[in-house]
Amino acid sequence: MSRSTILVLHLAGQYPLGGIGWQAIHHLVGLQRLGHDVYYVEDSGAPPYDPHARKLAEDPSSTVAALARTMERIGFGERWAYHDVSGGRCYGTSLARLRELYRRADALLNVCGATWLREEHLRVPLRLYVQTDPVLDQVKVARGERSAISALEAHTHGRIGDALEGFLRALEVAAESDRETPPYVAEVAATARGRWVARSTSQRAKRGASSAFEK
Image 1 (cartoon, rainbow, N blue to C red):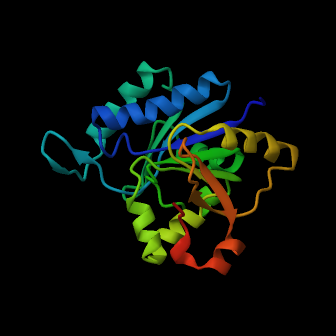
Image 2 (spheres, rainbow, N blue to C red):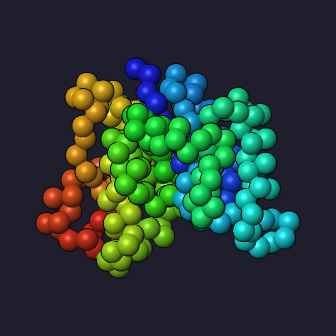
């Protein structure tokens, strides 16, 4: 498998709690062990939660410190970014370097759908939506909620469970075809493994938004 630059978008800083942190670590370390060039990025624009005060915090310093310690422990001390959108500051790396990562990355994993993908994210050719809490999105799409459908349409692939093989294969295919990939809407496939499959938005338009997820 060829070496690819992959960005893992998550909310370990926004919610500095044990279980949330492990979600990020699993993807970061796993993809790195597969031989990829991996970075952690937090760029949702949402304010962080302070578990000690049990409320949202305006100052991200506590969150940034906790995130820095975690990244250092797993060998990602120089491979993380926390973009405080409201404060206009980037921690862990410079904003200029973060933008450069968006320009040269081969793929991003939007774990939990933590980030509403913006123009800079859409420059990344392969964008995988990793759903960690099934059902909610499916219900929203079944109801025809345009915001949920638009959020999914910003991704090229999606998955639940343990099925990453298709996405990793797509990295190789993209590298062989000048990194071009058509827009897709992620759909749940009715398989024992809970694998996600991708279908084109043109197919989606024919069938209607209400059937975006199939059982």
